[in-house]
Image 1 (spheres, rainbow, N blue to C red):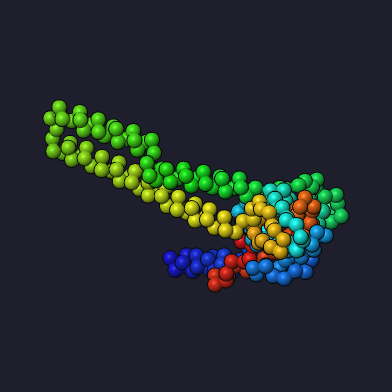
Image 2 (cartoon, one colour):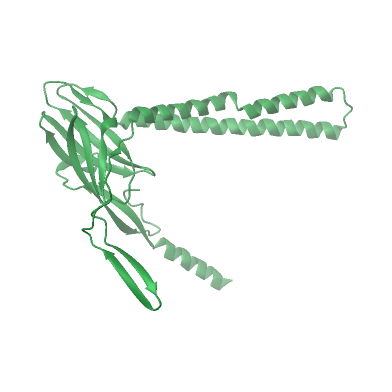
Length: 277
């Protein structure tokens, strides 16, 4: 028993000290000031517009960037986040090697780093208005279930009332009455717990919606001498090693390059989670 315990403890220790892989995104030319603690790339648009772009974090299915746009021009500036996009570049991926075994011989095929890249297509930014509308719909659905319950609860309530009415004409033992009352009480407790769960989910969605509304970049018109800061969400890609992010300012593109590199960190029990996750 002692040996088994020691082996289990050793396994946990080794697991705690193992290396964990992660991805790191940063500007290819970080020439701008820090934006909320993140390195940025800064460009001056010909129309007297300054744009700073930095990477914030990896979400489960999204890449989150933060942009600051300042309008030094004499005319208003239209910003349409749903027109932003990035183009993934796979040509800088690590050298790939495949092996084929024939008998005792092993053939290795190596793809050089300069091999043709995969076909690059535009990956459009997530439309902030559509995202908020979807979040609102989910919030309303959960709130409705929390307040009025589900159709199953209504059917259960009707069935219980029907059973109570039918029992009036029956001769029941105290045990039968107690059993029926307990079933009804169990049903009520179950559905009350369901309503509480929906209420909690509604609260979480409400908080998420309020936070997103406060940080996400939305369609707007920026007046002269004004600036705006907001987050841009893109579908996530892990395979590309370079992303060319294109933001449109008054229908004219502003282009930024970001590099994405894999890495590892030691996941010691006392260490914190690596940045990027």
